[in-house]
Length: 109
Image 1 (cartoon, rainbow, N blue to C red):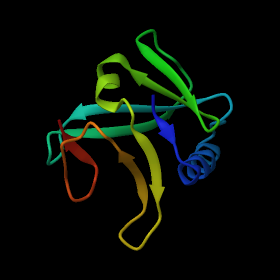
Image 2: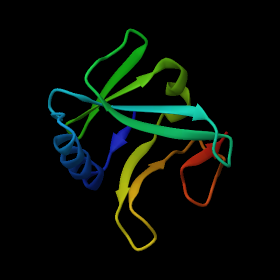
Image 3: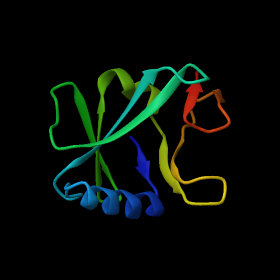
């Protein structure tokens, strides 16, 4: 399960609308891929198609799909949005990550 903070929800709804998606009908696709300075990096996209290997979650009125290979890496993660002076963007607060890079975009287990 992935949690979505209130600030992340507002930003997701806004960005989805700008990109022609509807938060009540479409998904946020979250995944993990090899790469980044810590070994694994996060992916976040908008999508309207749920694939057979996807797990579907909903939190804070946001639908999230995660493919099965990424699911174990993301259990218990909270998706936040930071708009502070140190940069803007989505932040993954992942309790499974043993090490993260300075930018927060990659991690290792």
